[in-house]
View 1: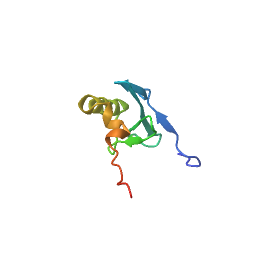
View 2: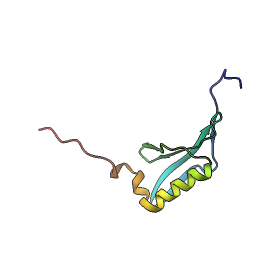
View 3: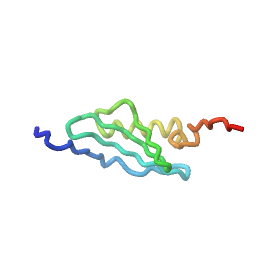
Length: 91
């Protein structure tokens, strides 16, 4: 393979917006053309990106992992409001 260029990113057709309970996140399932493993990333309305550490054999496996997370934890798990710990205020 000629490596004079950066490898292309292949995006799965299973990617796209997902809405539940009035909240929408962007589901991205992709891989680098030189790697058979698929990456799962979820981006919330604030642009915060959540990327699974584990990669997946198929795009379908990645989507199933997202769906299982939604079913077990809800869409709130991807929203910044559930993960923000405010810093103490200085007086």
